[in-house]
Image 1 (cartoon, rainbow, N blue to C red):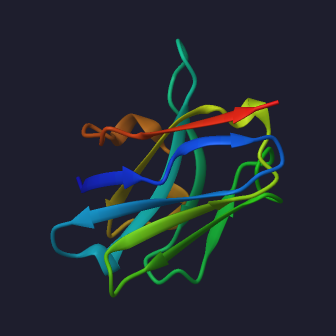
Image 2 (image 1 turned 90 degrees about the vertical axis):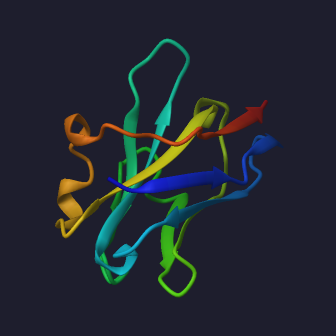
Length: 126
């Protein structure tokens, strides 16, 4: 499990942009596939996007793949989620998490995560 602190959320108008950051502590960050997730009130947390150890491979769910970009800086132990063309339905609490020594496709498997950060609230007004 990784220890994370998410930041960068806020209130933005529809069509606006935000960049979320996820600072990861501990060793082996450069061997950890990372992902972003979001949770709507009263709903289960859901996968949004993932990136491989090196950053060479990434993917996102269909609803955001043309608007959100996941990236990472292994020198700063940080993962980012650049969000553009935001919609009211993107309003949620956003979390990051990761899996050490895992394939990027494993990041979206939700049941294996036991620890989560506090998340960062994103609110998109119409």
